[in-house]
Image 1 (cartoon, rainbow, N blue to C red):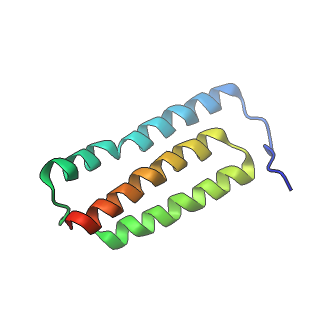
Image 2 (tube, rainbow, N blue to C red):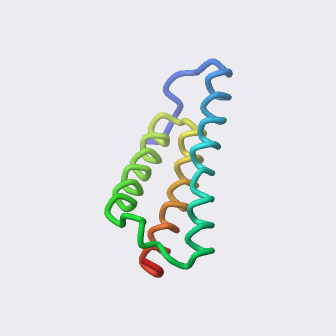
Length: 93
């Protein structure tokens, strides 16, 4: 069964969602940069970050189910960033 958008939203809601998605997605970049710059991730909780990655993955599934491009894309990129933090934690932790 192909995924379809459940209901049309007002275009303003899509814009607000897209802006929120950009802000929350790219908020991970300073954390990644800090870990890479300092070559340490002692202060990062592996359990919390892995749990967050699991939740973000479920948001991707949800976004696919409702056909929301902002939800799918922002959480897809966020998942990659969080997975990178997990990887950096395992390497530098």
